[in-house]
Length: 188
Image 1 (cartoon, rainbow, N blue to C red):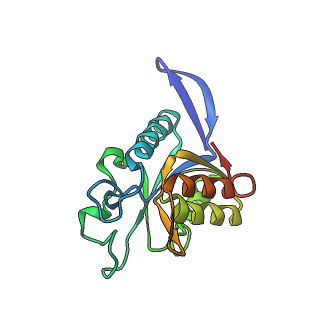
Image 2 (tube, helix red, strand yellow):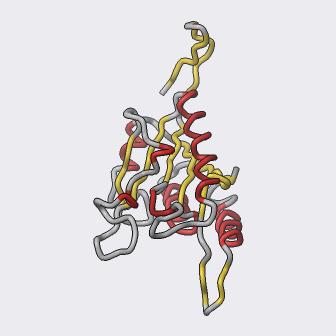
């Protein structure tokens, strides 16, 4: 897709738009007062807002991923405020919203078909949770042949525990981004 860049109603250049911004699970339950509050979600959301503004200015497609869990789960329950995409980064009418039920944003969704239909080859991924849905989606994107960039400071995660020991969220974030960097994505 080729989009003109206009200044003062004059076309000054064309941008070949093979990129799309994918925003994963920036939903109310991950914020203060939500059922599954993450570490520093507001800071990540601020960076996501900057990515959205840049994408809108350049004509880059924006795709929101929204996770809906079964009613017996404790967060992202359909019909609750927690499942809603944050109003602070509200999708515009021209943005695509894809509903998913698994950590992998490609699994049992039309994400891949949609990306192919609009000629996207490169993904800029951000969102929540770094260690779960972001990680899983990035790895799947590579399997589908996409070139991926992950904006690390536009992602958020939480403390994890193993064998009774807590792994702090900042270490979880660094470890998962480090694992993705190089083979699966470029971390920016």
